[in-house]
Amino acid sequence: MADYQTIILLGIYFVSLYFSLFLFLTYLEVYFRAKKEDAENNFSFESFVDFPIVSILVPAYNEQDVVKKTLQSIFDLDYPHEKLDVIIIDDGSTDGTLEVANKFISKNNSKGFMKVISHKNMGKAASLNKALELVRGEFFACLDADSFVEKKSLKDMLSLYYQENDPNLVIITPAMKVDSPKTFLQRIQWMEYLVMILLSRISSFLDCLYVAPGPFSLYRTGVIKELGGFDLETVAEDQEIAYRVQKQNYRIKHCPTGYVHTTAPPNFYPFYRQRRRWYIGSMQCAYKYRGIIGNLSYGDFGLIQMCMNVFGFLFGGAAVFLSIKYLFLPFFEWLSGAFAIGFDFIPFLLSLDFSFRGLFVNLELLLPFLVLLSLTLFFFLMAHKNSNEKLFKFGYLEVIPYLFVYFILVGGILLVSALEFGVKQDSWRFWHRQTAESSENMGNRSKKFKW
Image 1: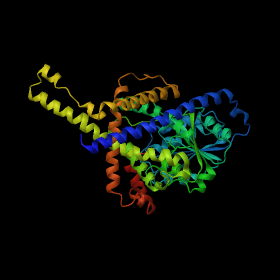
Image 2: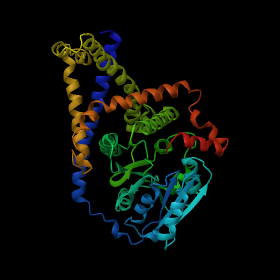
Image 3: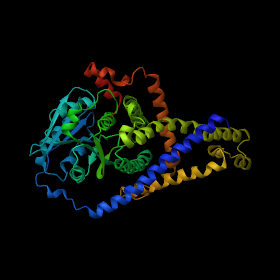
Image 4: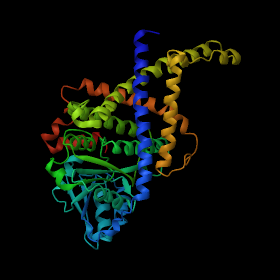
């Protein structure tokens, strides 16, 4: 094996093992501390007679099929309607989104806590900023129009603000699950989201959260207004606002019981578009806030989380390279050989060799590989327990592809996104530099990148 391949593999093993063990040890601390706090905690949100006013912003672009269900989930929240301030933002939809929203309001808005604003297509961030000027609440939440919040989530998330009693706590993030997965790809994403909930809980313990998901993140209104609202120049405004909050040394916490359900892409093309937007947005944010990477002034966020984000970009590409070299190329060589011998059954089986051993460099490195695999399985199992979900809720078929194939797929999308970002990297503002020039161009952005 060439030396550079050995170095790549050694680097991947070492860094992956370091971060995995760090997360494992942090999880143990989170688990035992949470157990102790649950036993001691007598906090009840019901003890607050004067509920704070909470504004809920619902940006919608061509969501006529799901926006009614989204609004119904808000209407069903276990929270006084007179203390809610709901603003549905129709961002120039060309379907029946506006009509569906108005019809729902006319039927269910007897207390006048819901209203609709409509304008030509401006993009999600610009729509949120326009609605932000109208909010009345001390806190506000964003809820994507294809997502649905559980009844108790708002109270649970607000409770964190009062438990922490810290004016520097600016964002509470939800526990986001995939809603009613039907396709094979959606069920795999369902498992992925459970792992993301667990990792968010660990990151929250370290004050290292770097994204405020569009489905029902809860903000402190005054601080977000002081910071200038949502950024118009990135395709991932939910990440950018979290980075900006972290840079100003404010805090972000995760609410493990603040469940919200979102609609996952059902097949490859919308999945590819979603992940491409996520990854390009992540690269934009990492570039914009590159001064935080490894910066001691930002504690674990700079030293751990930012470094993990950067290594994640690198390892995604490396995983694709290694998979091609040690899995796919040997497979096609084997297949072509089998074809050459007419698929004679016995020689066909005897020729089976995917060169897996090359992935370990030597036998001494088999041990760290097995440790990494064990930690992956551990987090996979604990993620289901953390979210109170059955391990094989939707069957067994998706587990193996999720553990061994899915991350090669997303690594490939990450690599394509990185190449695209690099080629067009005359400025990290490439994707949205025209948004400052005209709302029409922002509309083009919104159509290109589905929220």
